[in-house]
Length: 269
Image (tube, rainbow, N blue to C red):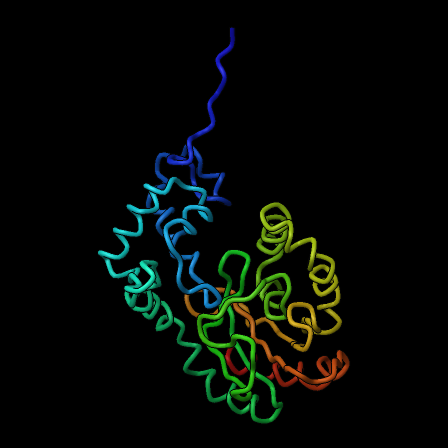
């Protein structure tokens, strides 16, 4: 009679997407669960309760209750007095600020980005990677009428955006191939939606010197981006210029806007 290998219970399971760490004694599962809990909060859903968090994290309610209690005590969560639910606490912001300060490129880039935004009428951003997203470390809005989020800390799909595709071109070929393989395996829905355009952009980059996304994430947004290479702390990054509510024009993005981005990128390297 053979003994069946039991799957770990939800209380001992590593967070979704981190199966490679299952059984790793050095991997602090409780810490990972707490960090994943914080990532559940978004601008679209800034307030969540234990029941919603338990469902998303696929954890027992008692486990989630202990996590939220601890995070409130440490200032990483704050409790909404009226709903009894939670929102991110100010300690999260304090945690991120030292990282932003490490990116010295932001101070050098800001006046140049402001000028490009003024000349082009577009919003200009610098982004780095967060898993399969791109997060902005600097952002200049072209105006205050944009209905889509664009600010420092905003994150968007890596595969679906011009800046995400340009990020891939900032990586070394082995890094890029490894990341593409990870997206195929761990983000199959994103890859099914954007994979074809990702590979088209990678193939066309040597000719165009830029990457594009036209109406793919938001129907009335088009963008062009160029790689920045490795910035402060050796982090690959990319530079983006996006336009909202303008008739799609790939030739204009490649012929008029991309050269201005390339000039700005050379000034920052």
